[in-house]
Image (cartoon, rainbow, N blue to C red; front, side, top):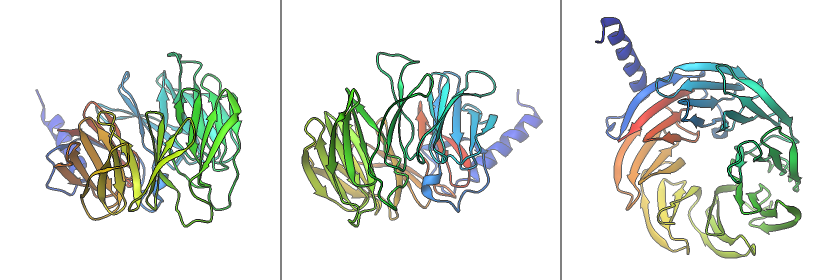
Length: 375
């Protein structure tokens, strides 16, 4: 039975959730809870908003922020379980693996937190050369949980491969540093077989053999003097890399030979995603439109969804979730891009979206974490 006091708290909780929403089109986005984590972050740059990491086993979600905090919440209730300060700002999403949380900060440190108990503790930390510009990528072979690898890039265009178990540097490859081109790209690092593939802000795609770092290919996509604002999307499929730039250049590259298979000049691109079912590439443009292309570079369809710039996108099952810089979020059917639902938040969502079991976790630019059920 629900008593009057519990009823009051339920009403307050619903009011807090709905106060973050400014839309009558809630069908499809069902607010579950909201938690205010930090003060208003609205004056900061889009790359300063980190996403979330989910621990489904213990029903936790972890968030980092520019204050240098790691925050753990119960993902069923939204209740804050603990805060842990690492002092230096964290602009990148934490990465959870096997009761460890891996965090990279602006001081060039990688920290492994042991989160197996009620309070976190530092398991190891490693100082690297330069600020870290991408989320930690985990590479584990043969199901090993203690002897895997962490892959990171720094703003000195240097690749590091660290041991998961103790943070020791197993490999590092230095790149050329170009003044004013050391920015946060947050592109993933790909591992395919024994190859490590990553893109640099100098305009190069690097394909290296992790067993022999002298076996390295460098493919120049653009030169540092070109009027290009950097890479916007990076994905892999069938021994090929798909790479896009903010100015609209789009490439398919063969991993074994390093050869550019084809290139397309499209309207400016925010990001790209590959649908693992159809092997089609979804291209999200800065003008608010979406293109669907096949892996041979042919256009299947293009649709203008909404005016305004796309901040990010995700393919979740048979649906596509798109978020815009003005706080709008749209949900589409993957086949045909038919609209299913939309919502307007009171602040933009620049951070990456975490999702699990038809739920999404949205970290807004006002420092609020919201959980939605997708119907």
